[in-house]
Length: 265
Length: 255
Image (cartoon, rainbow over all chains, first blue to last red; front, side, top):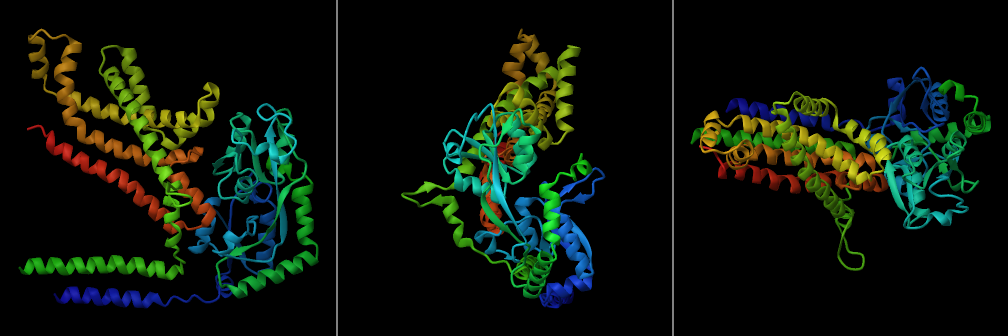
């Protein structure tokens, strides 16, 4: 009997010992740890692997520069996009820097920094299955199948713009494009410029029904709620980097030029 | 009496630790529970009561599982006979099928079926899911059925032959009824596995229970609430089958 009492006591002690885990300031925590852990997922050209398997892309440059200015090392935590917010909430990393669009629904669970980038959606269609569609409205029919990536704002944009169409959702864009290549869907919706790149790469089979992007959305860093010092640090950093032209220059390199292509293929 | 008391104390300690550990970790997460939003996804009360997306997912999961189990049984039965045949070719085909299926991951088979085979033969996502699942479960069923048939003593064969029954008739009237009775419990167990394995078809965008759960989570980020609910719905499908398996085992016990 004595033994059981001892065990119970030690368990209670154990719990009260860790129950007071400090929830304080994540900015201090990152600096003390010396590593900024960044959650991300592959999106061309925001983040992708080069020929040697290293991560490159717009977001990778942004996050690396951010860590350099904070004076800490960087650690990327590749995460499935559909589970990236739950992973942030359970503390797998400090911040999501992955081209995440700021939406109301997401803001209920996480805090966003000021936008450091803007991105629009575009749509690429199959010449064979959806020939000569000239506007978005032509895709809003019940017989139309549209593929997108699960958990992205592209999937939301497709749902919103084509409520009558059927949506097929996959875990990455490559599978969605594969659906279009095998003519099992009429079109793919994704963040620009991926659809444009695909239309160039497979110009005999794909085309862009509308030239412009739609649903222009702000992009921000996402962090746990209530991390005010971290958030204000990020906001000042974004202001500074917008001012000195770093963000614009990097954006230009990854989105307007295709100089990086030989690093990938 | 004393032993009972001690057992009781241990039970209290055990539950205390489990409940404590769960509430401790969850409390530590600062997770904002929003259970109130879940019922709307099970039954939608929008103009009249209608099954919500989650129940629709349950329906698709049951549909896929039922169709797959029928085909899996056919694949299993045929390949079990081929495996025991005298013909070298038949044995080779069955062996190749069973071993290649059992030694590769199911998710790879589903991707292979959907992204490589389906475009060639122009078959739908549902059909490729059912094909992949029934081929996969069929390989396991085949080994179960073969074990059942091999476990029937030689005397039954000899008795059947001495009555003048042919090979087919012996299987039909003597061996299979005996063997099936023996393998019913593992067969129902395989049915439970099939329901669980069917969750993988969500990767090819079939709106089964898992896929519906995934889309709700990606829209609302209610990850804890939704996955608890999805797990409970799977349990509601598999537990009756598991209980049936136990019942069948008693009912058809071979003495």
